[in-house]
Length: 347
Ligand code: AMP
Ligand code: MG
Image (tube, rainbow, N blue to C red; front, side):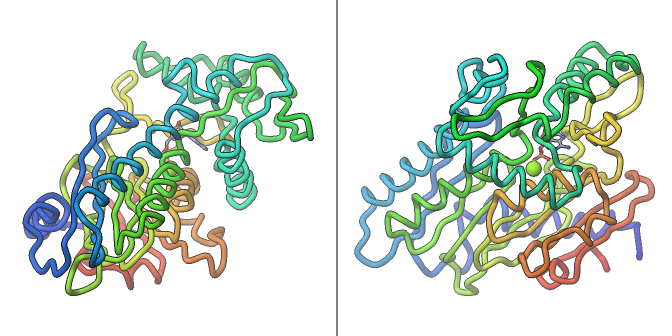
């Protein structure tokens, strides 16, 4: 596999400018009318929603659908963010051993988190809140945690510390904390997409910080062109996918690492060791839903290419993993992912 792709990136950069950024404003080849909203202040990142109008839908209806989809994103953030003190999740984390009665949405995400925990052999574990907080603090202080601190945070991070009961969810230990940062954004994107489809849009796209779900395009080709984020350069393109409907999410891109004592550490933790994951520089997953794509992108960041064998058979989940460093990296992908590529990386 060739690794020196820099010249090719320059070509891809031009292509991606046509697809990811300018695509919605001056869409070459668009054959159906569409509207774009770019609401700010959602999940600390950029958001873009597109509604493709069917015959008979007027602009006001499409705007209402886009506002409704935006409200769905904000609602999930209000429920599940750990950055908001009064989110449902923050209240659970601050509470005693329970029982705690979560609402329908958070329970759905916890159900998916359990399936991912089992499917990934424990690599994806939303109860690793104490470890995530420990490494976040280490990043802020610029100082590695002591082995003893890692040991005790690791002991407090365990899915089996959650007990599901008719009365709600109990914690085995008071210190148990859930972090849905690896999956909730995908869930929110799915809910927003449902609002667009439910309002009668002929197609739509929801993009939150580069994690995307789409259906029914406005394009002659009937494919949305989705840029894959570059593993080592913010805002640079790496490859392009052609998707009729489904989701594409990326984890572990370079901008989300922290530097401690001169070394880069991932924001994704390997719950089996209590240390930041080092198995992948970047993971991009295509899946039928954004929740599956988001969750598996985080899980494969822990597992690396070996994790391909854990992907559920027949689940339509395909992945691309870049391992190594900017100087010497390797690209690994599932056969199905290769079939979605319309441009690069060089194979
Ligand atoms: P993503 O960018 O979707 O890969 O999500 C990364 C976020 O997931 C981190 O910032 C944490 O909030 C959370 N996280 C980190 N490690 C894990 C893990 N092993 N399992 C589940 N969630 C994790
Ligand atoms: Mg994720």
